[in-house]
Length: 274
Image (cartoon, rainbow, N blue to C red; front, side, top):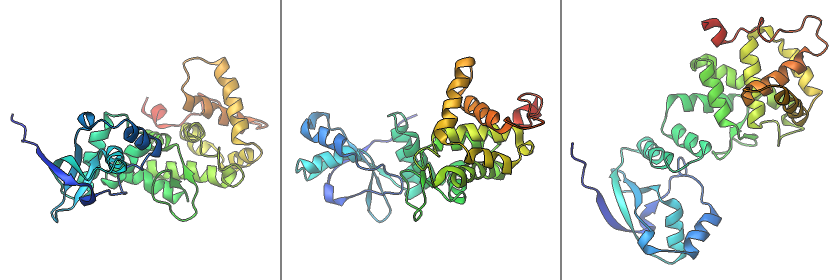
């Protein structure tokens, strides 16, 4: 198998376009550091996609490009790839950056822009809950969540599809209506999202939604996480999602005449498949 010969060109920086739909935000400190210690021999190539109309969109090297512009450089070396449109570019952006430690949010943003079904479904589920994903285009005055990885895990653990999306929406909407207004900074902590998703998935319809909401309204996210810390001290080999799920379980059972049993009352997918 023979690889294609790369198309390498010197391109005017003014001819390069950045598509915010999938590209990460500029990081001022990072750009400043590159500019301050600029090394033209280590600059490398800017990866760009060339659309049918000749537009050159930056796929990788956005921070280096900004640093070059700060130094007054007018032309940069580019590796030009034929673009089949924005979705194709977003896929290439994800591939370029996956091995470079791109954050979960940045990869998710690229996957949504690329039209990947699971990512699109999770994003729609977040929106349906009246929230937004941090780092993505704002949906009006909606609060933004940071725990997108936990949303993706919750979606997959329910088997994806409509059931997975509905599960994610329910978890986030529950957090928004109980804690979102008074505790916006902690209501959507990744551990809180993962723990509530674990609890609701494990016990399904056995959980009376009105009761868990009432119990949560008497707590704060921080108090719940304190209870989680106590639980983790007594247990070993427990994931964080399960540990926080047990905290929700403890809160739910308090004062209940016929409390849920952690094992006997579980109805989640794993138990049903066993």
